[in-house]
Image 1 (cartoon, rainbow, N blue to C red):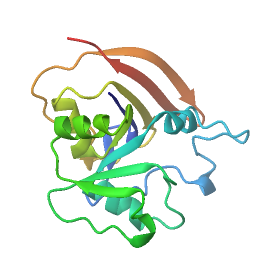
Image 2 (image 1 turned 180 degrees about the vertical axis):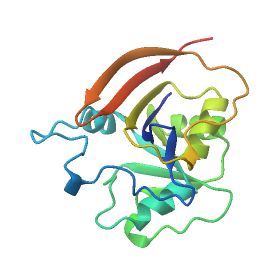
Image 3 (image 1 turned 120 degrees about the horizontal axis):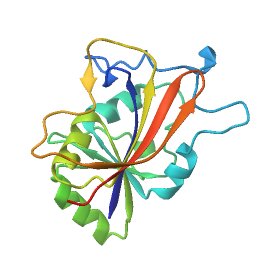
Image 4 (image 1 turned 90 degrees about the vertical axis):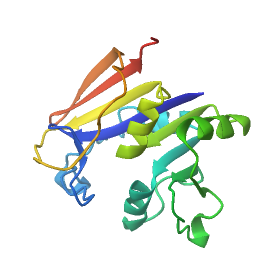
Amino acid sequence: MKASVYIATSLDGFIAREDGALDWLPQPEDGDMTATEGGDDYGFGAFMDSVDALVMGRNTYEMVCSFDGEWPYGEKAVIVLSSRAVDVPDRLAATVEASSSAPAELIAELEARGMQHLYIDGGRTIQGFLNAGLISALIITRIPVLIGRGIPLFGPLTADIKLRHIETLVIPPGMVQSRYEVSEA
């Protein structure tokens, strides 16, 4: 099973403000989005096409549910990790489910269902999968803004995790996207 991270951080390493707000991310009206006028999304569409499901934490799920507009993941399966009950509206019940499984257990469950590639999202969820040695690849886009405080992408680790750099792209107007594979120990 392959498990990948695709995420944006502020230059100082935060994925959201302390309250979960994402107002520091570029917005379409700013003209600063990662997709160009020609529609180049710098690999996100291809990445989404390659994954069988998203695994995200409860806080990330609730933040995405608060966005205006359509559910951004379409018919893609979404598993929300939470130790508490998760409110899944009827309109999402066909694609969204909750789980309280540990990362390794969840991987085994999803692999048994035929899934081969997972998109892991949300700070604590990413950290849990990293600590369990279950992340295969990281795609991190650094946004040129310092927010000073917030929710960090990375936290304490039980051991060093060595990465192999695959490529780095500069995305106008100043974003930097780096791709890494997790090295085998």
